[in-house]
Length: 420
Ligand code: FIX
Ligand code: ZN
Image (tube, rainbow, N blue to C red; front, side, top):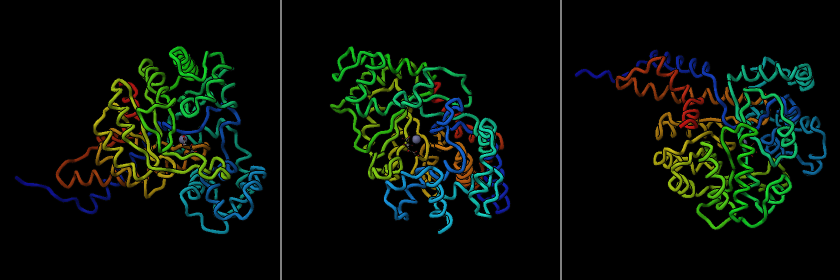
């Protein structure tokens, strides 16, 4: 029987172009960001000064700045942005991913970066209307919907929810519960102050009140899922408040409401506190804990992303064993092209298309533009290679196949997992 066995260079290029076009045209559901519905007003960061003072850039600037950290933090946002611009963009070429991202964003928004004129950039942003700018950024990134990170423990955010407002449907709620799981002694009095009968000891009654709290907030924000980020030494099962709250309150609540629980594993908070938000680090996680959760609670759905590059292969293997686990995102320090490409290839090779390979983690609205543009480049390259491999053995991926597959990766698989 005749075997095809080859793909010519023009055929490969045409296939790559087709994949690129489809990847560019497919709208994304960005399942984890730190952006807010515009109704949250100043909590939604946007514009050049917020872009320049992004904590990824602050960390890079601190490597070069000679002033004490307190002096930097005492400056206004504009002056901090000035310093970061001159340090990272003017005195050296801005080749890091976070620096390049600012330029990609400006370029795709139609701004001329050749003049290197920060004042002109500021003037342009000052002339924008926020509502329109939200739409422009979403359209330019081809992002249809985004998940926020909503914390009832955030004193600026909580009152907005309590006062109610008209929701922008593009911004989906996701309930963040780090303070509850990671610092129960401090969370308990806060819950008590909000009318829940919570005390330091995790009695059955207190657990019931935690569940009531979770149910109230899930409803208030119409949460798509609940989430926590955890340090590398997180373990389960374990004799800790965190493990007990997880088992007795969070997981039963998720089962009852049919919502996934997202674990973001491997962050070491405050490795250098002088850097504030930019001071967090990474450590290798014990994925046995995740495996125990998936195996021990088959009625629960888990979303997971891990921060350490060294954990990525193991995470895929756990996902191969447990269909109640959905892998997502190239999180934070892994969201650099070299690592994101390696991870995306490995994930497709190990778990096929049943994955959400990226989330932007944008903290500044305009970052959607670069984060998705950069990732689309990577995904198109990886997929084109994979389809070319199939072509070489006689399997012809049709345009409809490719559209379906990219749709899965950009939110379809996630939606199906949530609905399962
Ligand atoms: O825990 C998280 O959601 C992290 O993404 C953040 O804490 C982190 O600061 C961040 O912005 C990473 O991209
Ligand atoms: Zn995040």
